[in-house]
Length: 158
Image (cartoon, rainbow, N blue to C red; front, side, top):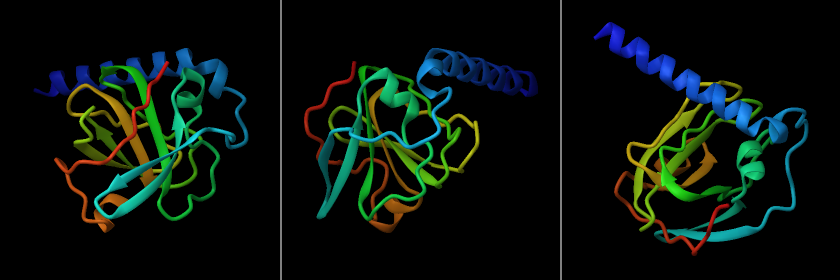
């Protein structure tokens, strides 16, 4: 059992190292928040979310790095071209976030609280194409749980 856990940690670290290399050109040297991303509006029950859309490898690799704050009901929606086990970390991200991994039908698959400036991997419980990062605790404060559905416009990732 201990060996199995160690192998899983090694697999995640190896995957994260590969992710870092793949995303490298975008994230290395990134010292300021990215700007100018398209904004999409999502709904969560009666709540509205204004989310910047990260839909390219470059914008996904930078994410919310170097942001000092998010406005009320603001976040970032990550869209991938295919469903997968898309994992996230918080390198160079200054604010605590909660990520919701979202199925294509808008169902929240799982959430994870993410500590700033860490390289801990946070992964979905099943393959997804979408992930939404919000200020830490946002989903809990709004009473949103696993299985609840978000209204998400049609978005595609490249």
